[in-house]
Image 1 (cartoon, rainbow, N blue to C red):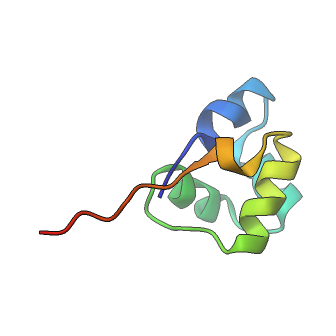
Image 2: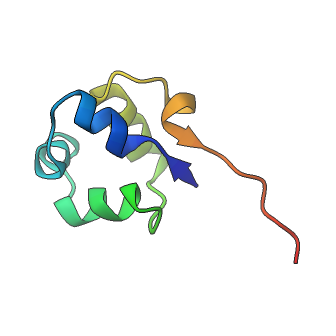
Length: 68
């Protein structure tokens, strides 16, 4: 799942570490989410959206899985 966390975080002038502290996860978790290497739990996704003051549907972009 793609996301706009990096852009929104920068607009709010938060570091990955600061966002991690606010969401009670590690900086590595925030980094992995931003780099599309990890999909957050629903609870964490809503927490990030709330902290970044962005509707969840604008923060996370769902893509239809491709059939190979």
